[in-house]
Length: 184
Image 1 (cartoon, one colour):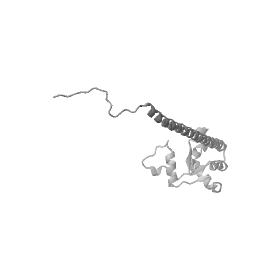
Image 2 (cartoon, helix red, strand yellow):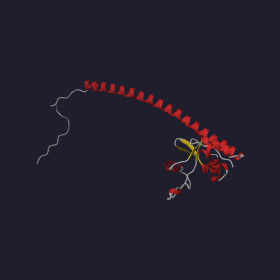
Image 3 (cartoon, one colour):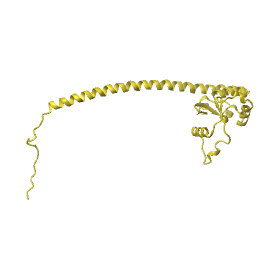
Image 4 (tube, rainbow, N blue to C red):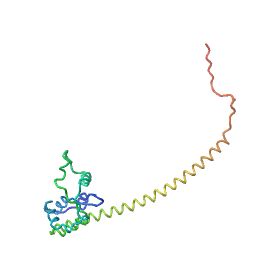
């Protein structure tokens, strides 16, 4: 069974600032039961330090639940995960290939590594775009500051100019308009 990079990208979540994959998703990709995958990991626990494998606490599980928007959460949310899942970082997924010995596991691992690489390049590109937008915003702010200063200066000149052009009317001048007289 082959999986696209895009399908695998949808299985990558962010926990503790790490991009991770669920043990159950990886088991599906490798074509094994989750229980079998986790047994292989437990038998080789020294290959999976904390930065390769995360065992989430209740807060991290809640954060993970909020990221999995495609699943329907029932009213009994406590049973969302029967057992606390293993969360594998990119390095942990790479290490799985040394624990699972099959040709399918190798091919799946290659596809997963490509998905992680693609995400990393998107994040790097996003950082570069953010810097360019910040630079553009600073330049625009400086330009508008100059424009508004010029407008304030012109507005001050216009006020002086208008006073010179508009004559002052005497207070006791004869007013123009219709007069109505009410007689009883």
